[in-house]
Image 1 (cartoon, helix red, strand yellow):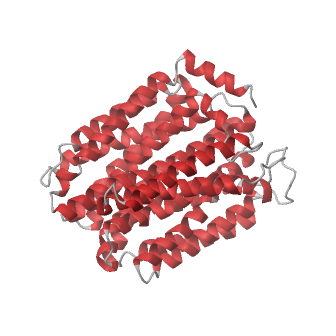
Image 2: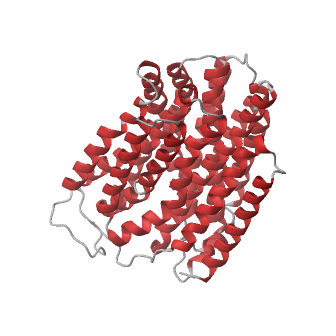
Image 3: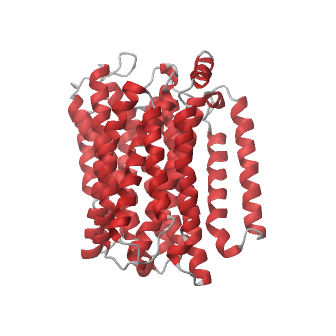
Length: 473
C-alpha cells in the first residue's frame, strides 16, 4: 500500500494474491467480449433479434463502461478502492445472472448495461490496487506484465469457451461462467486486499457525466438506426444535432471546472492526443472485426460456434505473444517500433479482408486474423505508454483512464458502424461478404493512422508539447 494513502489496513498484504484477485476481474471483462460475439447468431435466432438489437447487446455494455470509467476511478479514490471493486464485482455478477435469464431481447440489452456499470468499477480500480500493492517499480512492472498476459489469455479463452458453451448448453450459459469467478473474487478481496484511498480525491462532476453519456448514446443510436431510417430522417438528424450540442456543452462545462471529469489541457500533448486517437481507431477496428466475423463465419460460412472460436483463436494467441514484446520495445525504444509494427499488421490484415468473399479460403482468413492480432497486440502497450509518458505522477492515473475510455468509445462506435453494412445487406438482399468491403477499407485507414502515429508521436515536437503540458499541473 502506498505510504500516501490515509487509510491503512491492519491485515498483512499479500501482493501476489492481490494480483491474482485483480486478474480475475480482468478475466471476466476480457472474456465477456469474445464470448458474447461468438454467441450473437444464436441469440438472434432464439430472441428473434434484429441486427440493430445485436449491436445494442454489445454497445449497451461498452457505452456504459466508457461513460463511467473516469467516474468510477474517482469514486474509488474517494470512498475506497476495495469497496468500489467489490461493488463492481457484485454488480457485474448480478448483470450476468439477469442476462442468463433475460426473457426477451430488450431485457438482455438492459441487463448488459448493468454489467457495464459493474465493469467500469473493475479495470481502473484494479490497476490502482495493484499499484498500491507493488510499491517497488521493478515488481510493479512485473505485475503489469502479468496483467497484460492475462488479458491476452482471456481473449484466447473467450471464443473457445463461448463457442463450446453455446454449442452444447446454449447461449445463456456464457453468462453463468461469470458467477463463480465473481463470487470467489469478492470473498478473496475481503480477505487479502487492504483498503486504500487517495490522499485527495477529485470532486464528482455529475453534469459532465450526463453530457458525455448523452453525447455517446445519441451518436451511437443515430449510427445504428441510420440504415433503416435513413440519414435524412428527422429522428436521425435530431439525434446527430443533439449529439453535437451535448458535445459542445461538455467542452464548455469542462473548460470552466476547477476539477473537471476530463481536463482538456491534456490534449495539448501530442503523444496523449495520439494515444486517444489510437484507442478510438484500434479498438473501433477490433470491435467491428469481432462483430462482422462472428456473423460471417457462422451465417455465411456455416461454421459452428465452437469452430468459429477456433478460427479466431490465432488472433488472440498472436495478441498474447505480441503484447509483452511490444511492452519491451516501448521500454527500450519508445512507442515508434511498436506502432509501426501495429500499423503494418492492421493494414496487411484488412487489405486481405477487402477481398473477402463467401468462398475465401479459411487458411487465408487465418493469415488475416494473425496479422490483425499482431497489430492489436503491438498497439495496446504503446497506447498506454503514450497516454502517460511525460505526465506528472499526479496525473498519470487520470491520463490512463482517458486512454481506457477512448478504447471503449472506439469499441462502441466500431460495432455501430460495422453493423450498418449488415443491416443494409439484409434490407437490400445483397451479398454479405461484399457488403463488408467498405468497412475493411475504413480499417485500412485505421492501420495508416497507426503508421502515422508511429512517426508523429516520437518527434522532438511531440516531446516538447508534453513538457509544456506537464508544467501546467
